[in-house]
Picture 1 (cartoon, helix red, strand yellow):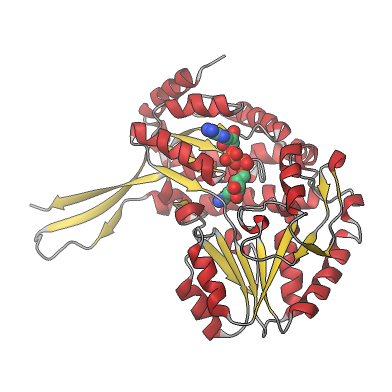
Picture 2 (picture 1 turned 90 degrees about the horizontal axis):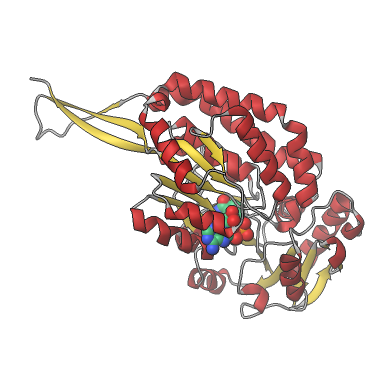
Length: 433
Ligand code: NAD
């Protein structure tokens, strides 16, 4: 079996041939990737069902479709993105022109998590390939079926000196992180993000860290409650809450709390049935360790909605927890499951103070049509990105760079930003005579 060291050496040798610098090569490679994903469509869906019980519509919509859309968008624009860009020259530099040449870094490492194991391995790969890098993907060991199909798809499509998958547990990541890569793209927990950044520092390798955190959702008193209930339920319970940008907790104005909770209940019944533990299409929790961690949170408050769970099936129904405050254990760490603690407020100021005192969230969702409230929230709280009157959708736009800030990460990608992220921007000043 090829070691991490051998693989990186082979990829570096291949990168040094200069083949990947040719934009036509990259376009052909992305087209090959697209065809391969289409060929492996059913095995990918089967793997997502087996690892996480994702239904086919959910798996397609939240994983495969996003990746295919990203490839199409990249193919449409790549020639333009990759071309040298002329920029103005300072007036102190007469008789000169200035250019920025995007160039690939070299050999990239992509470490993926388990929650959207297909999307979060292939999404960054598109950026790495578009920018002309070779790449090694390390999928999560917690979703073994997707890890296997990822390895098969890539081996079937590309030579390993260009794109390769190294499956394995933490030791595999550790072995890879000892090697000198030219770029590291990590998606996962804040704790492991620190491990990755420390390892990268050894080689002065630039990193992108796509991490997690507690993303607030705020339902203000003027919000359209029906719409908010629908969109909050979708954002929270997609993939059983195991979404990095899921609303982690709910802050609701006291005037609308009762009505909003009953609308959420109706929405949950409608979407997931009255007992989601019996719904064959409701995703399960990834493993027992995470199930047990979540089951403890169920003891942290009173059930406003739901509360049932079945350990043998790793399933927890959509649950709203009341009687919770900022000091409750469930408010101390990212939940990453279908449990939504509810805190009510009458004054937004102390609520925003509480959020600001905590690590910067990956996302924030605000339900209000009051622009003063929107300005107040956006001018007060730093967070990766988010939505007004919506959840999750900011991460599906090619035009919105997606990433965290502070404890929720550094660097952003999607659309053109993925290309820029995996490119070094070489600045050239040319004297004309
Ligand atoms: P994780 O950090 O446990 O694992 C991520 C990857 O790192 C896996 O491939 C794993 O094998 C590897 N890894 C684990 N421990 C390691 C170590 N000590 N050294 C080196 N590599 C190691 O994260 P996870 O449990 O797979 O994912 C859940 C977390 O990821 C949540 O916090 C979630 O919010 C976050 N997340 C963030 C995004 C985003 O885009 N910002 C997306 C999905 C998930």
